[in-house]
Length: 157
Image (cartoon, rainbow, N blue to C red):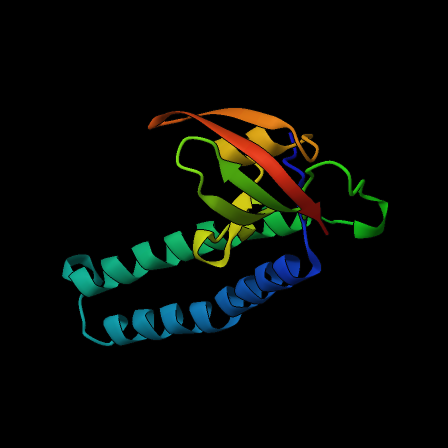
């Protein structure tokens, strides 16, 4: 079963760069650690060698997962998105009806989410609750802290 995820050009490029870094620098570092540990003698009682082998296993697992993510990644064609509804890549201005706080978010793929940069995942409770809504709609969203209501003030690309 494939898990297709949609990315912006910037997000997909970051994923590919991270994968390339793991394959080159990451593997080189683990190989260096293994060689260093091997030089210290008896491998049967060498904790450094065991740790380096574990690190190598973890790195290869991470590389395999990243390759699967990149393989299932699809670039989003922004030109075909409906600007009247909150969709992935929409910039949404919302108002919390409980405290009247106005927030700006961009809805992005899970791996691109960065709350400090105002990017929330479409898989998060708030992201899911905003998807498909139009300007003027009120989204009732259940979050771990309880129920929130957000009024959609503006949607842009």
